[in-house]
Length: 194
Image (cartoon, rainbow, N blue to C red; front, side):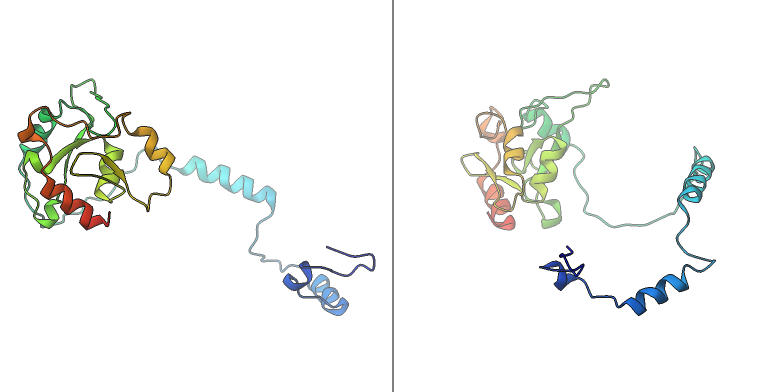
């Protein structure tokens, strides 16, 4: 901010180094070099229009072969968990089925396979994609009484609360033998610092 004398004043003074009249004159005299790195506005528009025309509609990506090792999962785990939860997300209550009859809900391991969690219905819960993502990262969890817990590190608590079913509790299977086992729920809470 300039004062009446044309000098920089206030807090702006601390952020700006004064430029002497001689330095300013040298900068103006030097001007920009012929091979300036900043293109003129009109040439930027022309180049971007040309670049857009050259973008291919189809692009064949190279295929690379890779070999990975991962723990084998029981292929029946998904089917068993979704059947126990009637293809419904246990947190949101959503039961979304696509045109091909496939449920949107996913079978989530409570104690992760990477940590030697078994492919058991009692170690599984049906969750929609976003809720599964939050659960795997420890943003939500469940008490032994199946209350839905929101971790203190969640940055948008009101947003998370909007997708939780009105009861605030996990929508669990009717059969007690298919409900999450407290040992797995406790592992998840401890692992994620609830």
